[in-house]
Image 1 (cartoon, rainbow, N blue to C red):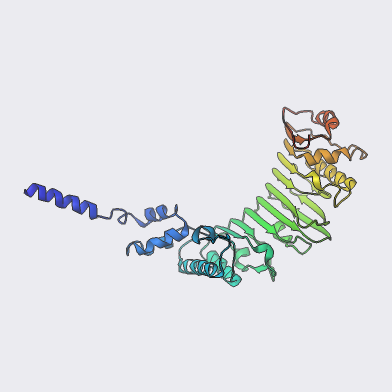
Image 2 (image 1 turned 90 degrees about the vertical axis):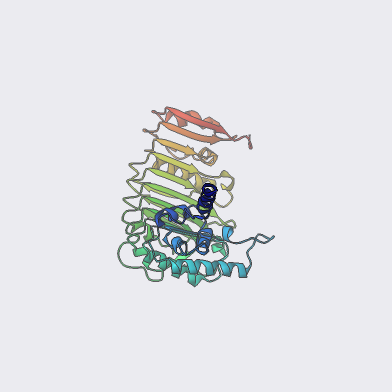
Length: 376
């Protein structure tokens, strides 16, 4: 009887023992890192042991799609958005530890002044990666001012800004002194965009630019960097813009280049001595609608000449379509002396140019040939 009683008491004690809470804070924090920030913070009510564990989380990721319930219209109410912002405000102001990543995805930001304070707090906590994604940034009448500290932080290495931002007074010297990855979305791309933001990053290796074009002026996009290794450039036409965009790329250490442009008019691509892969995506349905076909053809030839040192080349059907109208240009298709792999998409135009194209690729080893059956 005593033995059965002792065994029963031992089993009861085992069931009541909270072994998880006995784990070191470092392990508990690692467990919480797999949860959304909202759920991780909610563990503070479990016990006194858990009250401040969430504050040790290295990554603070806020997404109102996960933290809030959408209504039937899939749009957040103003009250729900305000509650979400209050939650973000409480968490980031209470966090006193080092932040590895601060990520914010918000479909409806009500108080834009809070965003500046959140970024400032993250920078003060030596944040390594910042990602800001505002779904409604295209409809913001005034650009968002980010704190100057974000541009001078020495801890920051990755910056992703998908919002309309500006700097009132640019700080002197270099920007983002240790940032290696920079992704920006520039709304209403014009000659007032912060071009110096790209060229003054001393260790930048990966740059991604998504530009939205609305105006009908001549815009110059100048990208110059001695450290850049990867560049992606995506230009989006909004409401039938007839903007003429001049793109200048000078990056002697660039290894990868991706360009998605609906109307390549002027590309000055120089000194790409290290280029190994180039992907050029052009949609031919816009050619001749806003710009003359001759101007687009000239732009395509100019761009191909700038990337002729690459070892891998891939292009969409718009390239071949434009080359059909470039035959009046002397030596319109350049030689690719180092190219070993080639991928292309063709439709019902430009087939007769393929023998010439392949003859300018003396070291070609393989190619991927895709036929667009939609237009065939």
